[in-house]
Image (cartoon, rainbow, N blue to C red):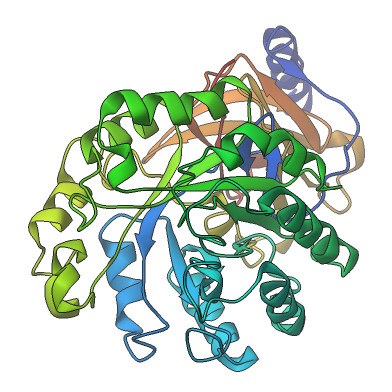
Length: 435
């Protein structure tokens, strides 16, 4: 009777969930941060809205405590300028590997930025985009395998002001060269005009550059300072990319700037409304002329500047709905056992194919369970859990979800006698916005 009751419960659960769950074969997905439908996503499809801070490792390579402080301030990412021997000291592979390790240790998506190209054509010491590519080729050994939490910012602010710069050709060529060399990371490309695209070269040619990437995983980066001093200018520029479903982030902005104050309120409001990423400039250490750009004074996380208070805790600031990347939360955990070693928790629960309306879960079939083991999927909200569906396979797609929402799931196993295993390690998914 116990066996019969257990089977009936499982069948009832399956029938009840028929309208909201599909069970299907496994789909293939590759590792790494990607672009889908004009948005950055993780390998699973979880939406990735970068919210973070620029940290000047070039000038302060010893301030490694800043990574933990940036994380504690609410960031899910950090943008790190790196020198390669033209304007700034050349970073070594070991130094870059250390930065990547610090990002991973502090659960931050790491945007590595080749800084020496800033202002080429106006800045005499600036490097070319091609020289930046050579720098990245020299870093391949330490960056390979880090695609799930490292983005390569190909060349910082690669040209000065003007209308005749070959930004399209050189940026497209850099993307093709990095892909040909085997780089599978998401790539970020900065606008010309000291990053502010004052001649709209990036805006008007973004589709051409995106098409140069055979993987389709290039995101655009605009720096918003004095040229974006009104909400109308902010909304018009960002809206052009959003309307065309071209991925864009605000890689640098501030509250004040010596060459004109941007409308920081408008930048943050638009980013929040449209789920765009942004990075404030910068954590600390700007020179005396630019101290207003510091978020904290003298690298003291407890001593925030006016800009820091606005950026971190103000409206649409860093602490507003910033979500940690799921790659740091969904790492596999050790096998879980009860007193009966045969009654272990389902293992290798993972996500795939996250959309605004659905998410696919897979796990390892319990050894020896065959078709007699039932698996119960539950949704977690803090300490509370809600049964979602029961199935006899190791693969289920949950539908009827909402966009721009975080969901956390876990799985139990039940044997033919109705005995329930411990709960699996939870996994989190963040659905992209509904279109």
